[in-house]
Image (cartoon, rainbow, N blue to C red; front, side, top):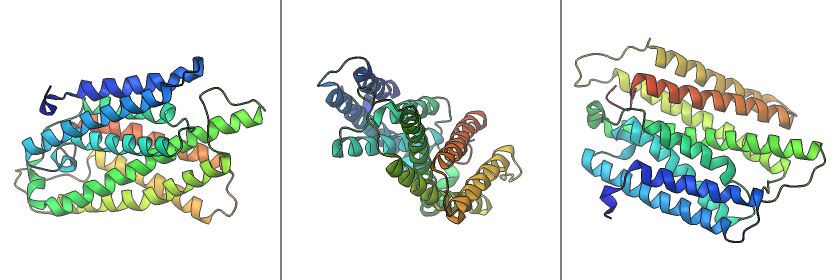
Length: 278
């Protein structure tokens, strides 16, 4: 099979198989389950890379600029790459159980949004690339914060109830999870702010479309409110002298989860928004 013929289902199925192997140790201990999960995830990453490169060549644009469909897949690609790097560095950490469901959600959501390229970004590729890169890196930081929050809450609940670790579910210490969570939120806010600022700037640049972009649209208003929520959380984390770890986890999980779900729903309803043909 040629790599140009890779479909969305190919790497979606690979990530689903990887999640299955990650869940196997919860029921029965198998020596090869961890490496099987990494092999399936790596195969999915290769297939996804080929898929994105083929679409990039067809559109003659970088995947981050071609469409919302590709943009979501680039975000999923980054998260899978991070998962593989962390798991290879320390295979005891049960990261896949928390990361792979979110990756599957992103790949599934990419099937529902617009895959049409936005011709207006062709004339502003450097600024458009900066805009898309800041957003995707900021969203990756949001994902990390969200995952760390989930792991923190699971670990906190286990320690509070004085129960031992479940087979196949090894988590980091609360201190480490809280520290990574803190940095993920703190770093994601400036990246998202830069992405949103350049996105607004792009709407004022001359373009070839007949209609102008209305900044009063529902998507822009909600995105602005979500950005404001993250900024308030950002300053709360910076100014609080002794933030309670569990409270940080709950607030981060709520803010990040609300932001992720709302953005995905908005992209589905808007048919692509600023990254696609709209």
